[in-house]
Image (cartoon, rainbow, N blue to C red; front, top):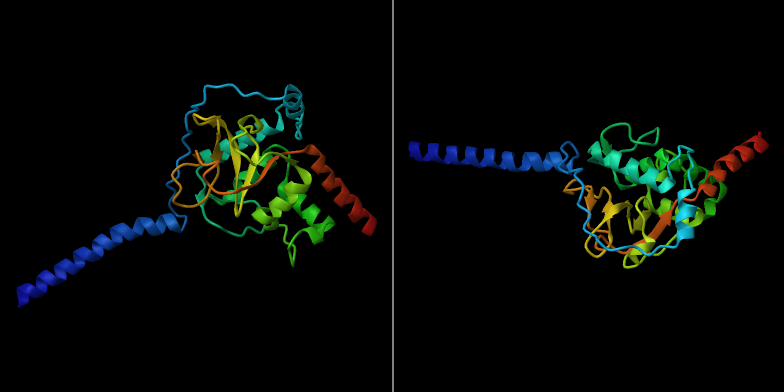
Length: 249
């Protein structure tokens, strides 16, 4: 009887240890304490040519909001790639200052930080647009610290202030690295690399179990509700907001 009790106790202890071994890492990943997402890039597999309108390419290349000599799309793409190299842990956290100041982030942070490095401060821009067009946003109490990190708000903003492009990923010549793609409840950056069919990869952050930040999921992630390219004319919102404030005071 004593030996049987000992065997049962040992078996229970082993089960408890095994459970801890299994659930410990799972909890660490799910809670954002451990990151398993790789920043390693996918290989470009497209060998065809893209038939693009030369005038459109010239126009895009001349758009340089931060005047650093690098086109906005190239700036956005480079910043997005730099951001994922830091391997942010997926976790939704409220930051009083707005932008994440630690190693955590969500899908909107990939886009917001990439745009900021190109000269587009989405926190300030969205806040200015919310103040100017409150009826367009379903926001009861505006909060500049979080409003720009919510996909419904970004959809309203980009629909009004960015170039709206095709949502059909099969029109491969209409997609460029550094473009922004929006799904229901998700957002990401279009990669400069493509699969065998010429469809660009997606640079995004969808959850703690994501294996790579760059994935061949532009078409398969979900229904595309928006495809955008930054337009520097939106920066006028900031001066309009300042003018309104000066008039009020």
